[in-house]
Length: 118
Image (cartoon, rainbow, N blue to C red; front, side, top):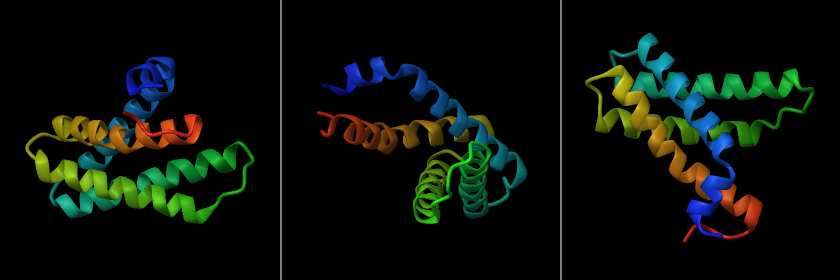
């Protein structure tokens, strides 16, 4: 399956994840827009809190290692987004969400189909 077919087949999930990442990063930007680094840290921490809260709410065990990995990925993506565009909170959150979708789509495609995008 190619990446376009995968994205079309999973458009609801990908749209939801994009919107969630945008909102999380925008909220972190509003809270701490004075520093690129602190904004990225807050973004990663908020993502970890949201994921942990979701897992707790549905009664799943919280595996801290994947949760920390997700937080580290989100910190890296948010910091990269902050380095690229730090003039506007909205543009910054949008760029961060776009950058986040690249490893997310590749990872989801690998986990569900067993192959990487081509």
